[in-house]
Image 1 (cartoon, rainbow, N blue to C red):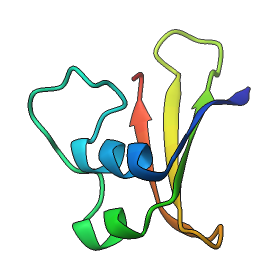
Image 2 (image 1 turned 135 degrees about the horizontal axis):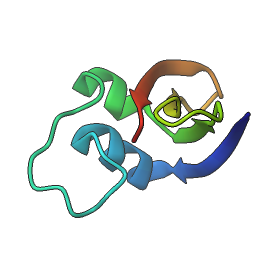
Image 3 (image 1 turned 30 degrees about the vertical axis):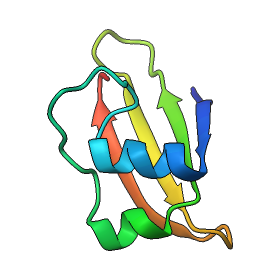
Length: 79
């Protein structure tokens, strides 16, 4: 069953997109999207999908611009 885990706004959302992680402890950065998309991000919504079986969980990060339009989506298995 999906649920919204967290919403990131403004500079925090752009930082997460550029680092490729919601954790501030990451040393390496692997951007989720190209810089052109990162610059436009105003919000990232983190949705968690729990299917019940071990290993079936996945996380989806959706980036939105200032008008609320979807810029990009990234899915991560078993975050």
